[in-house]
Length: 443
Ligand code: CMX
Image (cartoon, rainbow, N blue to C red):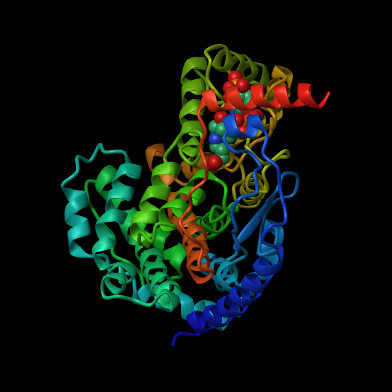
């Protein structure tokens, strides 16, 4: 048995036993109450699922197994000579709740290399699609197409015992994550580089090899990819891509179907697609203003025009966060350290000063601060990746690590089919009238 699977199995067994006992005693205790505003308002804040791999605080931001992003940078193993955390190390941490050793990370990198062969038919499926198909559509299709090799689907069909669900899901998780950089770089090269593909360099770590297959050379970009793939991996369970993956997985659909669905959620402009929308919005602003170096006053006017046109400012706001996103701050820190001077990054930094007071002034935006998507595009443009329609695929490759490690936990803890209750508008009206009558009777 592999050491990570063994560790996970032990931890999962212990937690499952503990939670079963807890549920027996406390199953009927209340943790929350739901308001009508929440029923109509996207279930904001309703505590209704378990997600082991990370937790989001509105002010402090994301913590992966208790560690903040600066702490990840300090504590997780790095590539030789590197300063940014290795995404493999984060996966290990999310899955078993322990910071791995250098040796353990090396083992995981090698595992993913050995599992990275993509089925031939997936390349054929991709090649059958027009090259102007949005890269996220290509990604979801490619992921679904790899479902032919699902260990979970095969073993379920053979009559697998419930107690083995997590084991088969672990196998799918490892295979799927191992293959994603190959699939994603294939999509990138076929879409923007005349299908001139670049083979893997198996001596490299997962993130650096991905950078290599994309065709962007240089140690700094490799470091950026390691950081990028680490900080985008997870944002607790309620965000749309995580929740979708979880919901679909709760039907015992395999990891391929579940992740493909989750990537469909990530492809929405209010979620992951915002990373392409940010740079598109900035490019349009520069074109409209006829300058690469707009003043703060010019940016202010453009922001006001965007709002007046009934559009959102992409990269700003968040359903949970109420402070600048630490994932934004981590990318800003990277740019300050590695990129001396860049016009496009300066625009992002000027927006950081200009946009929040304007959004605050609207009086309705709960979080006027930048989120993760406000910064990434400018760094990618700096390194020569200006095809912004691809950006959400990068987000997706990273997000797979969080949602799939969480899926292993859902299977290990025996999470059932998700089935919340819906109501009609008429039901709500009748409910309120009944409440009123009750109150009148009591008075
Ligand atoms: N620009 C303009 N208006 C904004 C805004 C922004 N960046 N953020 C919120 N608002 C508006 C909302 O559209 C809403 O307006 P209406 O009442 O007229 O419908 C109002 O402010 C209240 O919204 P909220 O409670 O502050 O925010 P929500 O939780 O409803 O939505 C989010 C959160 C992210 C969808 C929203 O802030 C937004 O649309 N941001 C821009 C898109 C974006 O960057 N998304 C990426 C998020 C991170 C990620 O998932 O990758």
